[in-house]
Amino acid sequence: MSGKPVRLDGQVAVKIAICLAALGVFFWLLVQPKMAEVTRLDAEIVEAREVISRQGKLFPLYAAIYADLAQADLTPFPELRGGLLGLEDIPRIPDLLGSLARAHGLEVRSVTPAPESLDVEAGTLRTQCVLLGDLDGMRRFLAELGGVEWVQGMQALRFEDSGGRTLATLTTVVRLAGQRATVAGRN
Image (cartoon, rainbow, N blue to C red; front, side, top):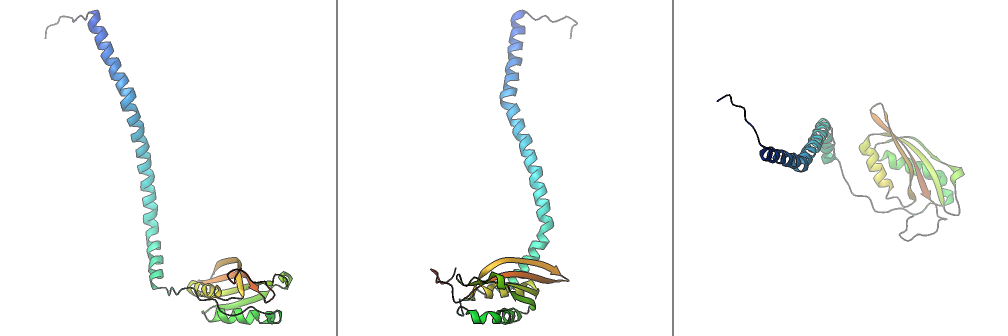
């Protein structure tokens, strides 16, 4: 190459400036938004990898629970049975709920009707039960409890671990014969 300096005349310089400006506008309008999109997608990929990592750590627990469910006795909810209790049957409530719990292998710590909660007009009485046993027995007990007609429902249920066994404290609402009838026979 010769050592001659190259001179650009004014028109060539303007054309080069216009081309550079067009490239700048092209970059700014088309490439820059795509780069922002790529950055956003990279952040989503990092977040998805973190989620997959957490799920991978939890998968053994999920597999164990799924295996337990496959072996569990998933009997359907029982049909409603039994009639309403009369006021004279209130002293029998601990025996009735206790025998139901023992039938499912649960140890009955206490079954205590709350006399202050007795509502003769509505025909309800709250009863607190404290039971000890395994979770499968608790599940079966609660399922059968739902089929007892004189049990209106539960107000509270709390599970605690007690040396490898489950301690359940539940408050049930017992329906008494003074309660007025409802649409489906239950409230």
